[in-house]
Image 1 (tube, one colour):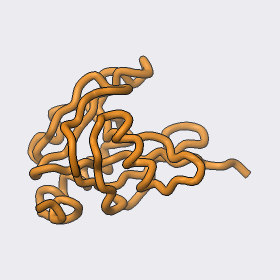
Image 2 (cartoon, one colour; image 1 turned 60 degrees about the horizontal axis):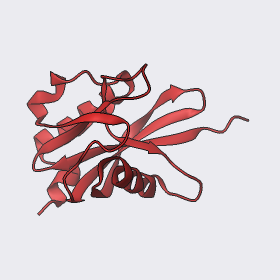
Image 3 (cartoon, rainbow, N blue to C red; image 1 turned 180 degrees about the horizontal axis):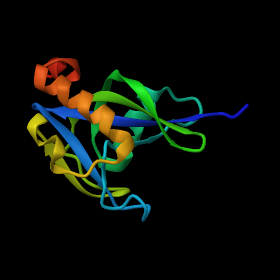
Image 4 (tube, one colour; image 1 turned 45 degrees about the vertical axis):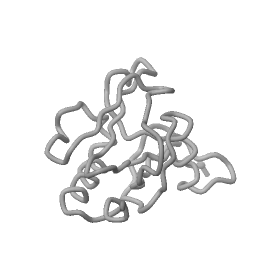
Length: 140
């Protein structure tokens, strides 16, 4: 039986916008955009992994909120799950694996070249932003 490892992506919301991160590595992904995140480590929940990964990669504190339904294969033994997250503190910076960040409004979804596996989750995250549902409503 093959073990599948979960990679979490964060649909980070702040002020009606979604955070997009441009990959700088590996070369096969460089220049394409994604929802930032990383692998769930042993003993972590997906929510804890997301919060840790965004602290390490972007230097921000987020609160994981709701899982976006579905999961997407990334390669042998890896599957992507995406969670909405609310920015709690800090200003995102491209510290690891990224060379540019952008905040996008729902109408700007197609302004960047998303990685194929991120597209369904991005579409759902933007739908939630446009309708005012999900993590964004928890922002005061």
